[in-house]
Image 1 (tube, rainbow, N blue to C red):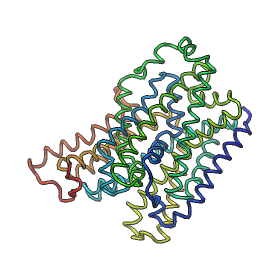
Image 2: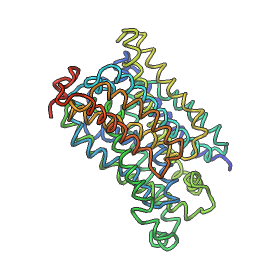
Image 3: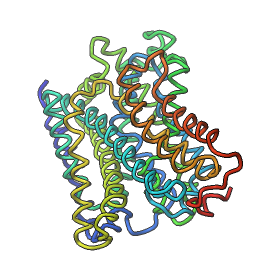
Image 4: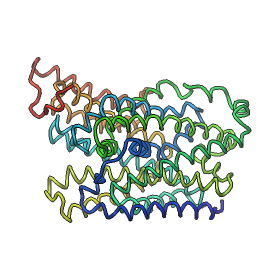
Length: 468
């Protein structure tokens, strides 16, 4: 396949504009604190788009399309689950996290369970964010390979290198500005892709005539998988570092709640559109592997339409990587650098957080080359965060249930057993998301039985977490 230089040029122009925004925002990132927080307060709608942007990266776009080729519109459940997660987050956690004033998930859990749990949380969160980065690079590399006519491995390396350079410029303020714009372009891109795909197939009526009825059923993927997506998706929303970081850029708890609602409303249509593109593309190109149907569909478009879709996918890639990188770098800075060096706002702290941002951007590249099923890899990361979500709920609503020791053991056991279960191929048809959900419940239940009935709440639990 020959490169489409018109599409490539327009896409690069779009990315250059985003890079210019990051350069302008760089002046607001003169310290580690401003680099990781953005330095100002933002309205609910803007943060709603920002939150959505992190969850509809190339892993969601390409992964949903890839899965929809095989299971139809029910593939949309993986994104709909995130929308449900944000609705629940708005009701149960948005106000509480904003009131708590912590902008890291590890800091929030440390209030209830102490420093060992804080460090364990950082490790599992950074690991989960890196896994998402792997799937994001894999999806972005697949798109770039189709566009430039190169092999997938080379495309992934280029994608990772460019994304890493793009991320480390302007800090959280540039991430917020560019990611909101990316989110708008992504939405326009998926709308264009869906409209083009439906027109190519001859309309929805023609599509229904060409594919089996099961492709339009809500449960073709299986209720077990849907439930697993719900568990993993809700868990990811409740305990993702970037969500907490974004929520803390708004004015108050009510605005945090509104931003969560906006994100939920935006996510559901995106999931349905991405799945529709997969069903249409699969019917149009039955001999193309599922991971390649979206690049092949783009290859059928005229230059302008293709440029819009590719720009949206590029925005998905760079927007997600920027969110993941700054989230992981913030955890490294707050939980490891500050305790060791104590340099909170000096030049060394800013240099460290920038270097950490670049490091966590580059590390996933080699593993991305060997990630064939993007959606499965993405949901392993969401599964790992499910354990943290359980601990967060207990910390806010039942702090007397789990002692610090049980919380720490839960995180370590989840990291080992959930990954082991995934690598074993989810034995007995039990998804790894269920393993991540059950582990903290079993550990805390066992610890509860072992300790004296009616024991005091650990002294480390602050008043702010005791209140319901």
